[in-house]
Amino acid sequence: MDAQTSLLQRSRWKAWEPAIWLIGFAAPLLAAQHSLIVNEIAIVALFAMSLDLILGFTGIVSLGHAAFLGFGAYSAALFAKHINPDPTLGLLVAAATTTVLGAACSLTIMRGTDLTRLMVTLGVGLILLELANKLDWLTGGADGLQGVVMGPVLGKFEFDLQGQTAAWYSLVVTFVLFVLMRRLVNSPFGATLMAVRDNRLRAMAIGIPVSARLAVIYTIAAGVAGVAGGLLAQTTGFASLDVFAFDRSADVMLMLVIGGTGWLYGGVAGAVVFKLLQDTLSAITPQYWMFWIGLFLVILVLVGRERLLRPWTWFGKKAKQS
Amino acid sequence: MLTILFDGIAYGMLLFVLAVGLAVTMGLMNFINLAHGAFAMVGGYITVLLMQRAGVPFLACLPLAFLGAALLGAVLERTLYRPLYHRPHLDQVLFSIGLVFMAVAGFDYFIGSTQQIMQLPEWLKGRTEIGSGDWILGMGHYRIFIIVVCAALTVALQYILAKTRFGSRLRASVDDQRVAAGLGINVNLVFLSTFAVGSGLAGLGGALGIEVLGLDPTFPLKFMVYFLIVVAVGGTSSITGPLLAALLLGIADVAGKYYIPKLGAFIVYCLMIVILIWRPQGLFVRKGGK
Image 1: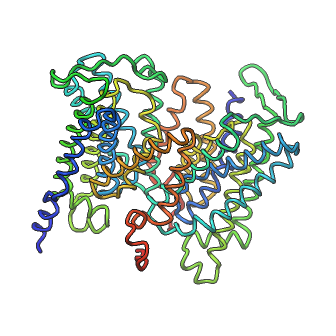
Image 2 (image 1 turned 60 degrees about the vertical axis):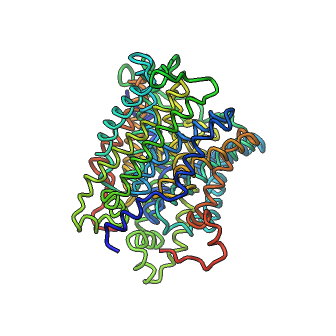
Image 3 (image 1 turned 180 degrees about the vertical axis):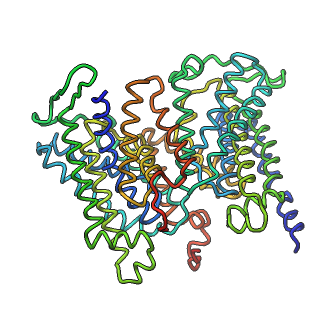
């Protein structure tokens, strides 16, 4: 099988894929009272997929991805509040500003070890948190940015209290970006990213411009995360410091790991499982659900990320660790 | 001005004791351990609980905090950490974040989320002032105590690392595990004891720092960044690197918060990013090595 057919085969739509999206789009209609959580899942799924681009496909460990989510959220909210309440326009602005920010930040992740990259990404997130906190004349500081009123989507569909419009709006945006990202990772460009992830030195040796690839994918991932942030701010009509918090970056990493990295549906599956788990667990122990998440993480790593989520490998011969 | 410098040095020394264990274990095992702050918190809570509930004097609590955290570190190293040394960094990050979350929620559940307050003994309260006018130097007695203890620890650590047999084994294992093991050094034992001592030092630092840094269940999350900055900026190949980085961080943080309170921790983070872009392996790196 030559390279072209193998790439094409991977990019072909499987039979179950449209089914998943149909279920997603039907959810706000079938269970209208749960529209808000559907909306939330769509947004975090988009956010998780954007992290997957850099973590799963390119192998950059980032602990500050929430920086872009937060930046997108604040740009969308500020744009809606001061300039124009149209959601689509706001989303474009959020995407544009975070893409610029991502391009600037991509310079910081080129050099050094995993630890350096971890620290730099974490640092960017903290700086933005600090900025949003201190520039209180613009962002409302610790109280959050209030009084964001959104116009109707495309001038027709008003956001309703139940959240049906919001859910569909987020689903559509997530779906469009998903199709684009799917196209991207299955292209020859995506294949070079995975080559960089697997062995940077060899990738360089066969002529892949590693730094340029890292810069491009980091910028794209930032832009997508910014859109997720924009959706979050628009559908809740609110932006608070919490969008920059370290927990967000850790949570999204956890989602991705639950669903499986290096696989766009990993982000979707992780987001669904994580949000439902969070809902159930925090209903039982509102204050201490962090403990269960921590325990889950520890067990997940000790058992092995690959093994825990594939029960059929539990009783077979232990896979050889490489 | 001198007072700020002095406070900064005390703060930096404290950070050094807290983070030195992390630097050594990270350099030794190439393990990204975000849960280091949890050991410091354990030391802090041991001290607070012993003093409040059992009435143990402050000085007696410090060795107990060290021992408690060291014991916990040894147990965890043997059971949980060791299988993960050769895993990808992503696994290590996830695992240690998981531990931090568990520690935060666990202490919250058993002890409560309030800020713990420590009653200092009489002889550590108060201040001494030297000089006058612009050059006045006000030294809190407790800060002097911190500096003295931490300086003594630093000298002791440097001595152990440079002069003793254990120190040379440790350095050999850091430089090249496989060759060290081939020479008959029990690398696993070296790892275990280093991890335990590192955790113990964190515990001691946590105990000393209750008065300065505060202590509540979110301690490991709040100070994780500071420990990591010390390690990332200082490099992991020596102890002088983290020491200088910790002093720099301490002084920059105290001075920044005093002179430009509006910017807060902003300066420290910017400084860190600039330094890491400029020297990705840290400021003080020994040439050669791994």
